[in-house]
Length: 262
Length: 154
Image 1 (cartoon, rainbow over the protein chains, first blue to last red):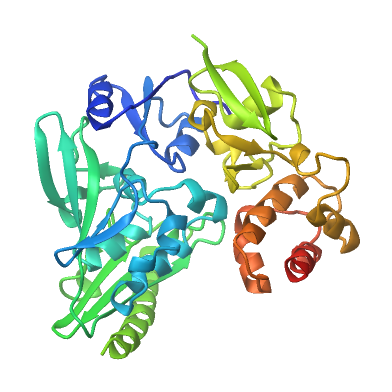
Image 2 (image 1 turned 45 degrees about the horizontal axis):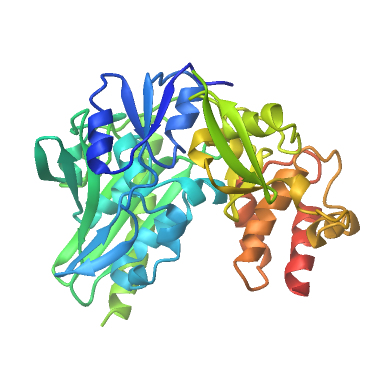
């Protein structure tokens, strides 16, 4: 399948990218592992694709108690990142390792996945459990937005059309913390029917889900009150059951990892 | 309006005109005549179009040709430049790693990426790496054995 006709421009820097995105039907492309498949199906028909993949927005660094993940960091780079080799951040690596397949992990980026906002994508659950924030840049300046505020609904974010993620900031959990991600996948698509990320700290536990609602979310009260999405592959009541199962699996692993972090 | 891209394909610099929407696999097959990258599913799932870009396996149906501008690309045609089979190719013959052969170029290039990461991979690691490559003939056992043999020998 061949995408609809489009023009291509490679952004030389961030300002150039933002300027190019002024065109109403322009779309930014990074790894392309979500965008190109929907362009081939002609669900997405951008008039211009703005290639941001060569901008200097990749890698994992730590400063002032926060981990900073460049949005162009690929899944494969996350899996191999020495900065993430600790119990508190294990969910990130666990999640990245299970994304798509080797070819997708070689190109697909964490930032691209977040802003694509597929309601069944894995990483938002982990970022929500860890309390991550996005740093956004537009022609008007910069702002910070919690991942929980950025994800509005299926394939819908709170980002402006001319706005790009420039950093993903993750507070490093205190000593004695552990995290984990568990999911049950649709066997054909590989996307989560239900996925849960759990962060256990000395102060308590945070659980976040993906695949079961209009957007990934942090659990406030019980699962019983949550409105759950259902389809012919997995009706709502089955997903509710699965959500409990994957949350328990993730919780068990996260607690073990927290113990190991003392 | 076509744009010109330059790809370093199998060690040779090749320039061609492409559109904004041209996928790398079409540039390789239709533009450069390298038909070893197969088109199987068209929906980014089967991995038959896998090539190496800067040594890493990618689905060439899920990369715009212009995104690969200036990059080093290895297709199955470039794996055995001197006519002698690459160790992976020999192993696939030896261990019955293929039947119809349609998925084989993609699988061999995915395996080349895996083996370039060092250490003899376990069967579990081989199967995890092959998740993006579908084979409808072999049941994968021969493929895993072929890759395992090369990993163990290197």
